[in-house]
Image (cartoon, rainbow, N blue to C red; front, side, top):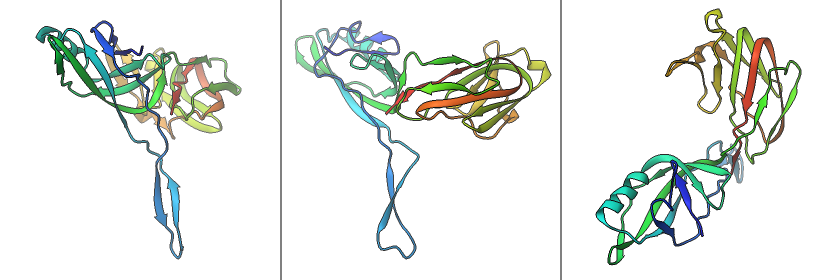
Length: 238
């Protein structure tokens, strides 16, 4: 029987029985039609964007009392991370729309949960590499089915160059934060360090495109004064 976990709360904890198997959505690249000057047919061009996916989770609640429905609504509402039992090694970033219970018996109800999922499915336990010694190219494998936007953690000073498959990304680290861990978040395209609970951006001290990792083997090295570096691959699947 299928089950799910949303933001750490499982369907079992809420007393929900899944009445139809949950199959996670998949994504495919979008294409647009273009007409070239003087052409006699349209050309299909692959776009760089992927649509969100929509699906529903059909459930049954034995306890449809007002208190329990409020508990379910509070737990299954808004933005969060969804893990489906049929794909336990992956999570989806989703929005759950407000639920509408349908009475089927005394104090029992069918509840359909409407889900909007961002692309893509992400690894719950992503692969991490220690790249401190990567003064020459080290192999970093992306086992996902689409390019990934990694998270790179480093400590260093001065001009640090991260070379990924021949493309250079530069971080200029001032001396006064050389002891801080710099986080390069390639998905959000920001670089920052933590000061207590605050994120202090140094994105303005970075140059060139944030690194991406294609499927399969990638090769990374660094130059400059680097005392520590590691890479979270952040694998994802279509």
